[in-house]
Length: 171
Image 1 (cartoon, one colour):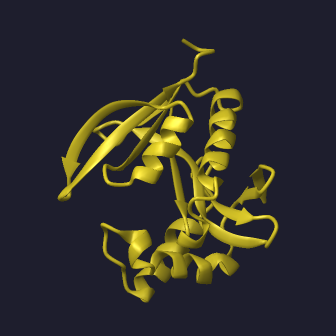
Image 2: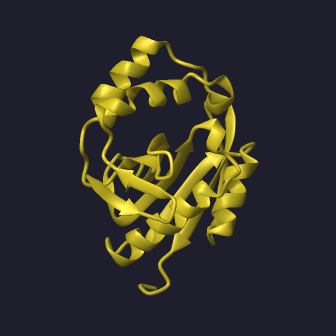
């Protein structure tokens, strides 16, 4: 089921046929950095248990239309507080794209689509974006999309940044 579309990308629920490109992407050490690559069996389990499950709001399979090729997962997912409770009207945005598709504007294109969808269709008041502080490409993308820096923190031996974008129509 196609949920959203841009000029170059389709966003749909994950399908069994996405398993191989998903595992290739997740097995790339440069893509995974600074996290470790997980064993294939764990990737397959994760794919089947987490990504094949349809959710009302979650990261969607991202397909390059010109090649009909799965290139990653992008989208919005519920924002939760420290007690793991969903915060109404808020979401997180994320872009996970396979390395051959980096630096081609796909994350920015996806981001614009999901921001528009989140604010105009879901009525969100706020969207957060978090990333590793060393991920300069992701920082550039969220800044280009209008997100503003909120804070920097440490966790799991890494430094991360948190950015936000507020819906100006609701403020």
